[in-house]
Amino acid sequence: MRFMKILLVEDDRDLVELLSFALLRAGLWPLPAYTSEQAMDLLATEDLALVILDLHLDGELSLELLRKMRLASDVVIIAVGESTAEDDKVRAFEMGADDYVSKPFGLKELMARIRACLRRGPSTTELDTMVPLEVGSLKLNPREFSVWRDGQAISLTPTEFRLLHYLMRHAGRVVSSRALMQQLWRDDRPSNTDPLRVAIHRLRRKLGDTASPSGMLQSVAGIGIMLKNGAA
Image 1 (cartoon, rainbow, N blue to C red):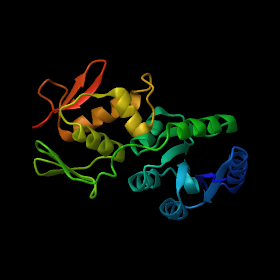
Image 2 (image 1 turned 180 degrees about the vertical axis):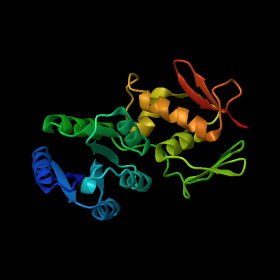
Image 3 (image 1 turned 135 degrees about the vertical axis):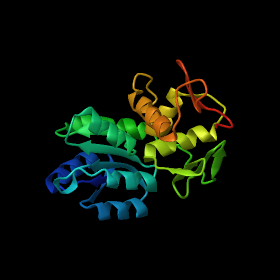
Image 4 (image 1 turned 45 degrees about the vertical axis):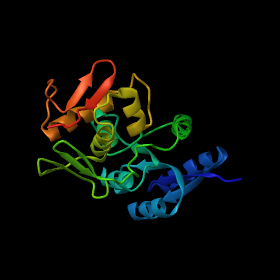
């Protein structure tokens, strides 16, 4: 029997032992990582189904490991934080988390979230298609994680980058909010679009775009958004 491997990035060894026991009982294979270095090594060498990532390794909040893991892989990542604040959750989603759980959490809730994420399956963000893209004045290179507009480099978060990448691949077509939620967060629930609205707002701002009819990103009420072909 082949177990699905779950990477546990957590420096609390007692919690790792508890979670490992729960995962084994559920027919999943836990792989503990107590440091960011161990986590990145396992991410590179193991065929992982999902990552549970504590955002407070060594007692300090750090989203850098989340960012690195998302850039390196499309594996499902459940971020575990110590705050219920909406801003912290949004930041985690922007860095590429697929789900967010606050400590203290119940084992039943965490296992339910794991099962839900595994049912949704691997991401189809198409970032494995490493062909540079150009739409109007926008240029995007997936291999270099770079975006340019009118010759000026633009710094994007991983989520903003994946959002723009997907819209550029579908330039001139309206992409539904449901499809974008599935692509970026593996979540196609129409009632859960707040992270998408935030990502679109911040992408517009960084591109120097507006929500007017002349803007590059055109919102279509009740449907989704379109990047205009030949965007200025």
